[in-house]
Amino acid sequence: QVQLEESGGGSVQAGGSLRVSCAASGRAFSSYIMGWFRRAPGKEREFVAAVRSSTLNTEYADSVKGRFAISLDNAKKTVYLQMDSLKPEDTAVYYCALDLNFDHRARMTADYDYWGQGTQVTVSS
Image (cartoon, rainbow, N blue to C red; front, side, top):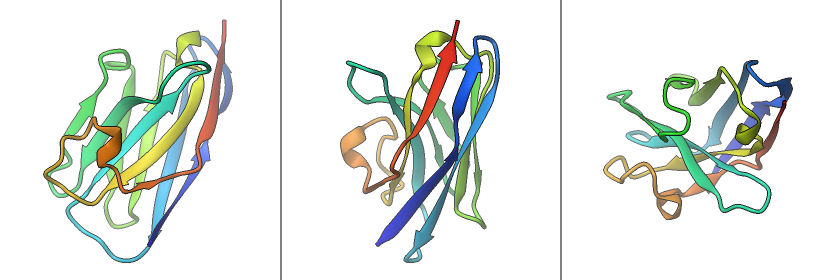
């Protein structure tokens, strides 16, 4: 089993910045994908960003491209999401997730094996 523990998040005004992080613990694993998803009130969970271990290749949803940056500390099994130029529409619960299959597409919710508990990000106008 793997546990994902998120931290960070909170409330900020539009244009501000926040950083969320997610640390994985438990069984050993390698060649994985770590991603961030979010769920806004009344909406379905959606892909935000992902990073692949080994290559550190990243992917972003169009809605956050250029504003958010995902990074991975492989030694600590910790993924970060730096969120800049935040907008009210970024308000959501943010979830980190772990996919143990490196070959999967990173945007598919169903491919991920483990999920964090979620952390609230609120952006006021």
